[in-house]
Amino acid sequence: MNAYSGDLDLNVTDATGNGVEVDVATNLLNGTVRLSLLWTQEIYLHLDDAERVAKSLLRAATQCRQGGKARRSGFEGTSSPSP
Image (cartoon, rainbow, N blue to C red):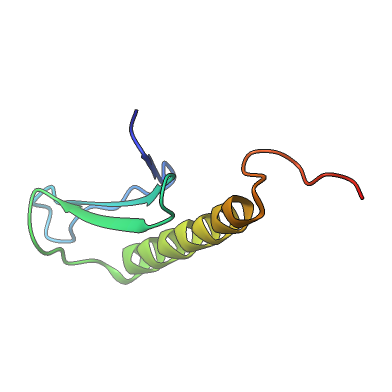
């Protein structure tokens, strides 16, 4: 089982056209966010693409925070019990 869930809405490649891609994923087991640069160690982004990556990182952080709250309360993947 893969613990990472990638952002399927993120489709960003290097501004120089060399095929480098960005991937943002959340680890569903431990609540961390992974930022990957595929095929290289650096990437050059157009301004719009940089905004897309930033928004993807924010979505991943929000997802991790929500998952962390569910794990701490003991109700991950379920609704809270009624009082």
